[in-house]
Length: 127
Image (tube, rainbow, N blue to C red; front, side, top):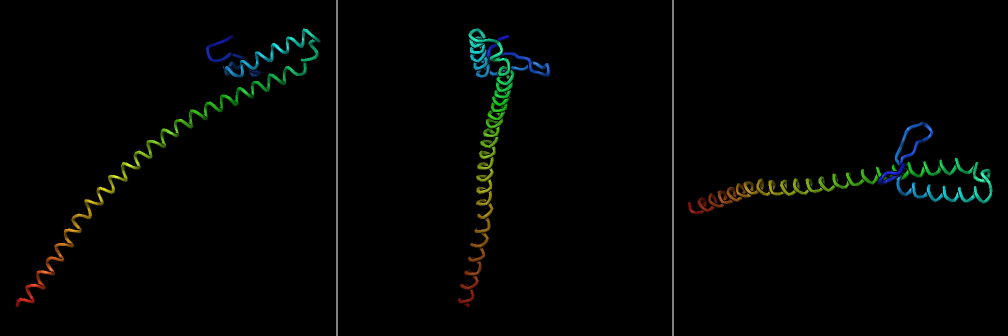
């Protein structure tokens, strides 16, 4: 049964699964070649080979499915990473501006203290 992006097949355990389009195309090509060999020689030529090829195609399809899942997960992780970098940069900027604001009064206190010390020294020298 063909669908838009793959072929529905039933595995040994009886559960149905969706076969990727690429693997489905390969399976069709291999099936046609098996038919040609059966017509030209005999069914016995491919009898032992057919289950092995089917197993390889099923494994290949499973690998394609795993790969697609990993690609989706990778995309999600990239998006998460971008958000974290943006958040980090924003927090870094906020921290820097907070530290600058926090240092400003300290500098003012130091300047005030210096002025006070200078003022006392000037007053003491006049006396």
